[in-house]
Amino acid sequence: MKHRVTSIGEILWDVFKEQKKAGGSSMNVSLNLHKQGIDAAFISAVGNDENGKELIRFLEDHHHPVSLIQTHPVLPTSTVQVSLDAQQQATYTIVEPVAWDDIALSEENIESVKQADAFVYCSLTCRHEKSRSVIYQLLQHGKFNVMDINLRPPHFQIETLKHLLQAADLLKINEDELDYLKKELQFQSTDQEQLCKQLSRIFNISTICVTLGDKGAIVWQEGKLYRHKGYPVQVADTVGAGDAFLATYVSSMLQGYPVETILDRACRVGAYVASQTGANPDYNEATSGLFRS
Image (cartoon, rainbow, N blue to C red):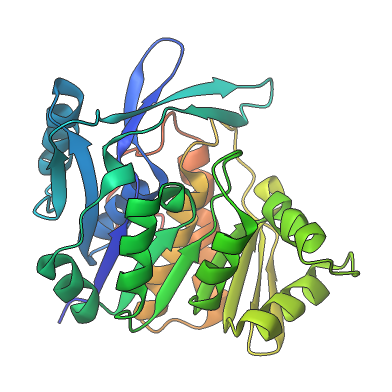
């Protein structure tokens, strides 16, 4: 029997200098889960426009279900201007409001979350009241809630983050985001292990994954720290690498791998995506070599 994961959040076009690529952190996570054999459901919204139709076709071409993606009658499909620095690190200009700011709650959404082994959400989708309210309600039905904190200034508020953290069973966060929470929550430690321990205790989060860019990642789980040095690659761009890491972590966790193996697999796929252009390079779990033991 396949494991099932329901995600909610952004679907959009990443607009680079010379091209546009389908993306959005939430869609990226769901599509990577689908590539890894998970029964992936995705709740979002596009506009009633050509950009929206193209995104639906993109997912259909990848055989990813689209039944929970709504078409908003007024708001446009999301687009994001992506700028790359000399190290190919990405910064984003995220237009608002867009269709996924106004996701509607439905019985189908609720049932999908209830039936899922995990429910994945992020803070960016909570920047407007409508979608934030929907996520708050769906979190009440999740068996195992996975938060990708995904801080994109100025699209977050600390009180919203606290609510979302309180609901999380697993948190994925990068080192800059961890530093932000340290300052906002007035933690005194500068040690990442101690910061994870404090976050885990305050918000009752059982697993915290901290991505460290080219330095790999650490995982704090049930009183123990796990560390991976990462895989060195020639970086094409960093768009979607963290999303691929998270999807691989969740899929590997559901398959029952030990934490060390889960972390290795997640770092390997994240590095591969960073070595390719755009957030969603094609790969096949069975033939790509990414999941060799």
